[in-house]
Image (tube, rainbow, N blue to C red; front, side, top):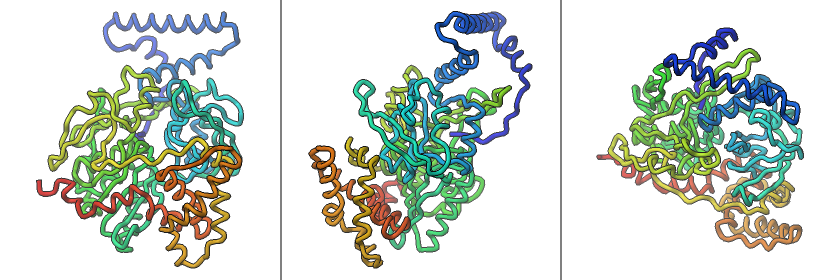
Amino acid sequence: MHRRSRVLFPRLGVLALTLALGFPGSAGAQAASYEQLQTFSSLLNQIRLSYVDSVTYAELIHAAVDGVLGSLDPHSRFVRRADAERELAYEQGALAGIGVALDMVDDRIVVLAVAPNGPAARAGISPGDRLRAIDDTTIEGLSLSDAASRLLGDKGRKVRLSLERGPRMEPDTFRVTVKLDVIEPKSVGAVRMVDRTTGYVRLLGFHLKGGDEVEKAVRELEGKGARRLVLDLRGNPGGILDASEEIAGLFLPKQTLIYRTDSRRPAARQELRTTRDGPFRDLPLSVLIDGGSASASEAVAASLQDHDRALLLGRRSFGKALVQRAFPVPPQGDLVWLTVARVVTPSGRVIQRSYQGLKAEQYYSFAGRSGAAQDTLAVFHSDRGRVLRGGGGIVPDVPLPEPASLPRWWRVVADSGWYEAVADSVAVLLPRDPRQQTAWLDARAEWQARLVGPLAARVRDRLGIAVAPDSQLAARLGRILARRAAEVRWGPESADEFTVHNDPDIQAAMALWDRLPTLLGAGH
């Protein structure tokens, strides 16, 4: 997660003097550090003079910087000025993208998060997928920023991606074609009424005006009769830390501790408390999380859980609670996002999974799963005395099953446009009558007969695969196809209504409202 702060650009001469003479510690330690720099400089010079291929100092230095940051933690990173400018243009809507967040894992570029309903999500790309090539050109040797930059451009441009997932030794490889689109950096996605008294807000990320967006959304729902709220943080990769403070504060009383930041530098140690009584501090609240909930979303969920303010449902969160701050690297104006602190919840939990002694690949393989023993054995307590576990992400109060995994052939279906073709062919035949739109929400047998069956037949005929989805997979495919049909026939609002009505996690939250006070330890 990123803390917005003012940073100054030091002059190069002062920086160089610090490197050469200003090492902390004893004179012996300074001399040893200076000798290490001499060794590094000699090595660079020897590579430049003697290596079989021609390489520049810039290439070597950038590779060394990436190695240094990778030895610190999995989230510190170096960004060249040109790439930083393109990232800013993307955030401001001047460039289109595919709707993914990337990270570097053991020298491989990996999809960290996927924007719901964005181009990548529609193509079947999932968190954890490893990027191999862009437009049939390998990305071997590219930095994270370089690869991300190649996925930005004009709206409508198509990029062909080669990816892999699964075990490194025997990966499942696939290709997809994705059309770039403008991804507006909104914090709030769908805003719907689930029933006459329950509102639903999907939080996509934590951006500059996230607090204002959430407050506006909940007030809108209250105007429609909402007396309780489902806040959806699933797949939310986080973002600006300031936004997490504003959003959590909407649901908490004045002067409530949201979280602390712990660091070896006193300036980075802070206690973040609410500055006013949150306008929704008494609104019954359930929060959905999963393995894609990371960073700022984990800080909000953990704070609400620690204060017994919300019931958490879903699956263990990602386990990333480090604070990064951008520092300038002169003279070119490059940036380094450096981890400066850890987030500690009000009960004292450290959400961040352990990464010391682990390869980055191992670290990411634990995403959404329990961490090391030292992470999860420590016991903490909520305000009302409920037992909570530390580290390795956040364990929900009510665990929910994982959704059925999409099979390998689904990526061919998504890349070829078959599922859109099947869904659209049914959509044009559906009556526009609002009664039919309402009936479609629960027409599960019809989804199977008119959508899943024909799609399975197409896969059998064209790929020669004996498709026989089990009940869980058939149900998930039915929801995907039926949602697409609703969107084509009745518009985006109908698609959101379909999701809220049929999402298994949302329905699980709806079934627990009567037990909410007991589950949150009321009366202890």
